[in-house]
Each structure stands twice: as C-alpha cells, then as structure tokens.
Length: 385
Ligand SMILES: *Cc1c(COP(=O)(O)O)cnc(C)c1O
Image 1 (cartoon, rainbow, N blue to C red):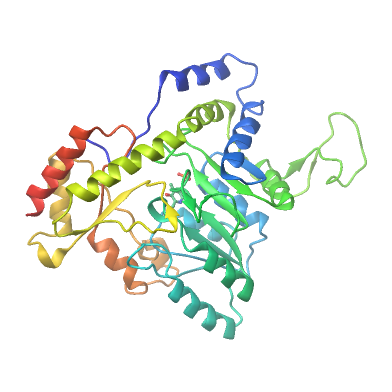
Image 2 (cartoon, rainbow, N blue to C red; image 1 turned 30 degrees about the horizontal axis):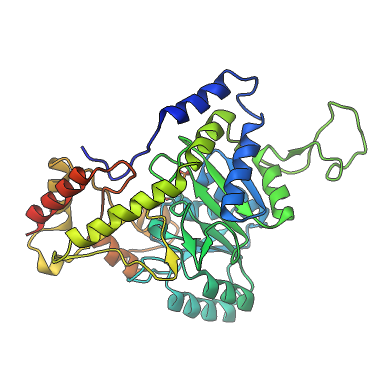
C-alpha cells in the first residue's frame, strides 16, 4: 500500500537518537532546549516550547492566554478535532467559522459577518484558532486587523505548515498571532514520533506555557512566593500538566530539521507533477495562493461528483483496494457526535460539509517515487473515468 503520508528516517536520525540513549539524560537534558532553539530560530520567533504533542501545545497555549469558563474559542470545522478540543479543556465554549471553498481555510467574509453579530451580543471570542490547512497559511494579515478591531487573541494551528511561508516570512514567526503551534506526528512535515511545539514572541506567554508544561511548578525566584533559597526548594504556583517532550524525541527532531527545506522542496516537486498529470480529470486540484509558500502537508483533491457516475466512497474504496492509501481530511468537527451533543448540527457549516463530501487526500510524502506517483495517477484515472 502506498500511504497518503509517511515519515522519512535516515541512519543519521537513528545515530542522533542513539547518542541520547547512551547519554546521561533521556529527559530534561540539553537536547529539548536545543530543539526549541532550532525550531524557533528557523521560524523567526523569539521563543519555542516543545511538548509531547500539538494537542498539548494547543492546550497550554489556551491556558497561557487565560482562556476560561466564560470565554469563547472559534476555529474552522475543516480540521482535526484537537483544534477545537483545546478550548473545551479550558471549559470555554466553542464555535466555528466556515471555510472558503477555494482555499479550504477560514473564510474571511464569514469571519467578518460573525464578528459583527457577536460584537452586538457582547460575545466576541477570546481566541481564534486559525488552521493552515494542507500547509497553506490563512489570510493572517486580515485576521490580525480584525483581532485589533474586535479584540481577540490568535493561535495559529500550523500542524500542517512547518517550513511554509506567508508573505515571504516563515509560518511560526508570529508576526500576526500570539502563538503558533506545530505537530511532529509521523505524517507531518518533520517527526519526533509524537511531539509538538509552540512559538511566540512574548516572554510572558513563554513563561506561562513553560509553567503549564511542567505541573505548574517553578524554581524561578522571581515567580515563587517564598524567598526560600534552599537548593531543593520549588513551588507549585499554578495547576499545570506533564506535557514535556523527552530528549530522545528532541534528538530525532533536531536531526530531521536539517532536512526540512529538502522535504518541502520535494513536496513541491510532487505537487507540480500532480498538477500536470491530473489535468483534464473531473477533479478540483488544491488551489495554491500566491501570497503563500505552502509546506504541502497534503494534496487534497475534490471529486466533481456531478461529472462522475461513482460515489466518493466507491472511488475511495477502489483506490484502497488497488493499493493507494488515500485518506479524507477532514470530517467537519461540528458533525462528530461529541460536538452534536453540544448543540451543533449537520448543515451548520455548509462549505466544510460540501468540501468534505467530495474530498480525498492522495499520497504526498518525501519518499514518494516518480513510479509510485504515476501509479497513483493511472489508477485514479481508470477509476474515475
Ligand atoms: C495533527 C494535527 C493536530 C494534532 O497533532 P498531535 O501532535 O497529533 O497532537 C492538531 N491540529 C491539526 C490541524 C493537525 O493536523
């Protein structure tokens, strides 16, 4: 089976992991801070905080931004559930803004409309989580303007977007946001097996995320209540979690970061080939915005069902039967049973649902060979036509 995505692990990666395994520190050693430094400086942000998943990073980002019971968090439904769940962990209420059918990212017109209505009801969200779907940035400049006008905070869920750029700057520089979050799950751009990282330019947010990552415990004299300077002394000053990344994971991440630009370049070569090979088929190819340099985590196509006499499910199943490991991104978050029970219904966000009903992600990863890519295209052609 050709998977839709997979990691690329070299002997160098393995050697770096082995070094840590043979060293004094498996966790809380020097490797995690080094990884944080490498990723944050790559992105052009002042601080980076590594954790055990992007889900954890989203959670501590919300905690650091003081999201609580009376607050709202908004995101778009075309994402993995973690983009919304982070708000629920903090007891906040969730709402969604539908996507734009060209970019599959949050629709700016819908956001403007919804903010105008929310403003009249005094229900402006505290946080907006913008999801850079498939690795292509949302219109962050406009979203940032709206955040100034209405007064909300911004977390970029850049789980798909490490190595991507928006207006010539790397995603994660936080020029238009408070915090940006990345994932290092094996299907993403760079992997640490499980892992995540948050970048920010605010020392205050960095300190808070640092505290929430490790039990709410600190040894920093400035933060502690007591002036006790006994060498073993520490204080718990907040209710935090254990969301630490370990040094084994960070070593893999450091080694992988050396190849990030190569990974993204190869993904672009694959995308350009798909764009040509899939011409004249009843499908909609993913739109590439000129303001962005996508990290190309995914190559999501839409089947133009009105021109095809098979269902999306049939096409999906036939591809899988023929060894093409396709996937679908995403089941709109609000249609999951857990979210329905919170009051959402099918029909609430029609663009996300329409896109979902036609979407298939075809294989796109660093090691995909020309032959494999040809095979994907030939099988897709035969099945659709
Ligand atoms: C993968 C992903 C996450 C969750 O990442 P983990 O590291 O697995 O917790 C969150 N949001 C989006 C958009 C993702 O694709």
